[in-house]
Image (cartoon, rainbow, N blue to C red; front, side, top):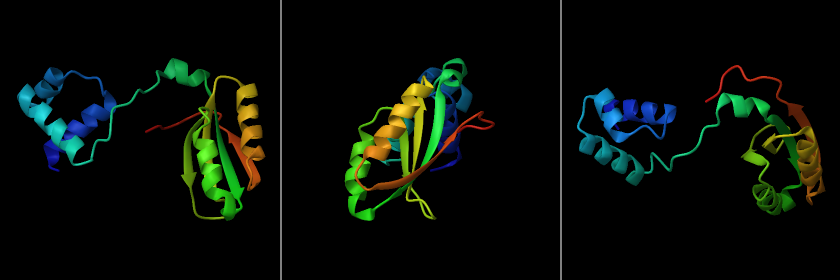
Length: 141
């Protein structure tokens, strides 16, 4: 990966829907060269896909919670499978330290966050949870 690829990744990170012609102008390359570079980045497994970023107006209406989870390791794989099926759980991380996992919940109401927490606690092997509701975000990816 060279500097041009890094710049291309930065532009795509800001707007994954930016037209190839616009990217080409910003990079001072031909449209076909930019298409080839994107294809190579996908082939080399540097880009795995393109996604939607929520508009700030919509995102601010969502309630986000970080759930620290302690789990009996004998049930970890089944618990992970169960949590992956829950659409309110946007991310699930296995971590080091006193907790085993962190689940990131995003939901439109506190009731849905509460239901999701109840569902997590009902999973066999979940021993303990500690939840922090996000009050504001000062920096996002």
